[in-house]
Amino acid sequence: MSEKSIRLIDERYLARAMPAPVAGRPPGANIADRFGRRLHDLRISVTDRCNFRCAYCMPKSVFDRDYAFLPQSAMLNFEEIYRLASIFVGLGTDKLRITGGEPLLRKHLERLIAMLAQLRTPTGQSPDLTLTTNGALLRKKAAALREAGLRRLTVSLDAIDDPVFRQMNDVEFAVSEVLDGLQAATEAGFESIKVNMVVQRGVNDDQILPMVEHFRHTGHVLRFIEFMDVGSSNGWSLDSVLPSAEVIAQIQQSHPLHPLDPNYAGEVARRWALDDGSLELGLIASVTEPFCHGCTRARLSTDGRLYNCLFATEGWDLKTLLRNGASDELLRGSIAALWEQRDDRYSALRTEATDALRKRRKIEMSYIGG
Ligand code: SAM
Ligand code: SF4
Ligand code: SF4
Image (cartoon, rainbow, N blue to C red):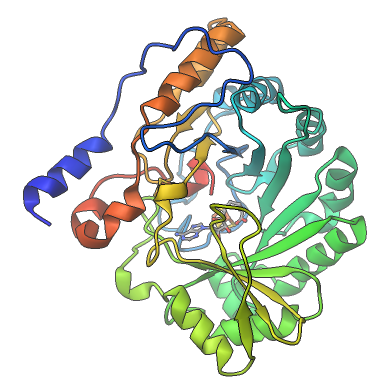
């Protein structure tokens, strides 16, 4: 790739002015971006804080005592989140994921879940409402979240071996407590529980098989995520990515496997299952097999900015619109305009331009929502 084309890619991600709202977008108008991708998913970050310091996300050296997290007044309140979510749902969004930071640190989160569980798509369906957590507070929160209407859950867990897990969360948190949280979620009756493991070569790749052994016969889906170059502080390099193909090859040496059909068109995870039916696997090859062509996700940050890509450098300030008294119609028209001008496809462009792209200052995942 020439230097010029790399520069062009970079410019694509620089600050863009809020486009003029598109008038006449009634609820039910399905919108698509410049590559024809619909706005199906919204990830909502409810806090930029976390009780872990995973080095690949919030390294201690950056997120230390002096780090300026958002003050309460800068964060969207539940009513504001609900209002924006309802506008997204009106524009065709049928999947809402609550994330962060660590979402269970947000006080009374179950109240927000109960509000969002009331939303209906223009065709009268409940949007798929789910949440990603590190599991540390699940024992305390699982039952309340389930009662509030949360049906699905993803728990991040990068190792089953206690010393490795403690080293990865970097706050001496014991793996037994996350496993107890998972048990609480199972008892609370969640319909689906997925376990996400970010794999880093030389850090936790020796945990792949132990994780497989641990989660066989639990009914949970175990997913392996390639380590991504999100944010600007996690010291990412291509060498530290263990490609999903290698993960599968490793598991196949001990367990016969077969691929499964996707649950729906455009599913990000490639599905596999152990031949004996004891475990379903998901492989998320965001680096080695990018899936930008089917990416239907928008992200709403804790302070109400809209990001059209995980790797965006700038988000659009919906909070100010909201707090200045914008009508639903204006908000709907603005969100439609922002989505319709979307041309992001960072991961697809990353492969050859890795070095140039990673020098850009990107937004941290803990703020934008993983
Ligand atoms: N704190 C919650 C958790 O860890 O589940 C939710 C937020 S976290 C940012 C969401 C997901 O992003 C987690 O599964 C985490 O492992 C993943 N993640 C964070 N940084 C990542 C990176 N550099 N590469 C790949 N996945 C990453
Ligand atoms: Fe916290 Fe989740 Fe990031 Fe780990 S991945 S530091 S648990 S926000
Ligand atoms: Fe979607 Fe951006 Fe990730 Fe591509 S890089 S899959 S556009 S979030």
